[in-house]
Image 1 (cartoon, one colour):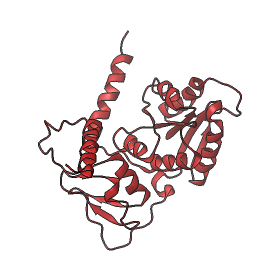
Image 2 (cartoon, one colour):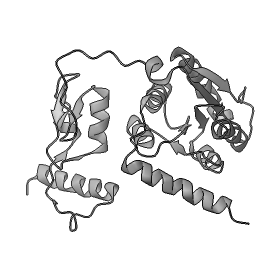
Image 3 (tube, one colour):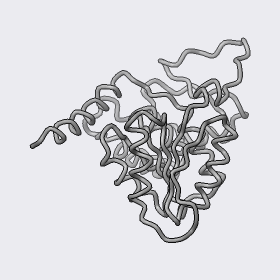
Image 4 (cartoon, one colour):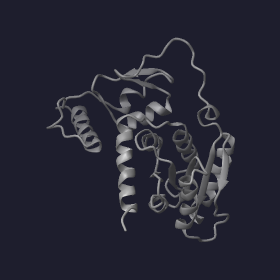
Length: 246
């Protein structure tokens, strides 16, 4: 086995673990693995035909998004030659209200994202904090999560130092599905697979440019429905079961 083949074998094992698959149980253990190396040399805005049953690594998906490369699978309709109308945030979201909040560690990034949301055409509900003076993140997570839970905000965004505590706090509020995202791939997955309605970010982990990219991807990605809807419903049923406990 060459060094390149050995590396691909290790990457394949990592992808199987990530996807919850077992090479021993998978009916096609020799599936073609699509990595970032397959995409980096392609022209910007081009397309790539994924082999039937192929596995796409998270980094390959990130490269595809960065370079606007369409990953075509057997279930993906082939693009027509007719130019498509450019996708705009206004068309996708209709300028819906987004609640945003942060603790002192996320204040600076929250202010940057608040301005960015206005640029995207959204109504912004700022739940604070309004300075770098030390505060408790659960208070602001609750304020944003309640607005989403009550339907007074379409989506919510929370920023603290790591994004973890705010995510935990927000998920205690009924009907909230908060997801901590640290790149565009996790933002896309949280919307497409989990129908997340609150996004949490770690100001100490990502910069302003990446944060804006995550927010844009998260706001524009629709829920995939189908098998994902069944699984999200199981999450919500678990919540309802515990809410019914005396």
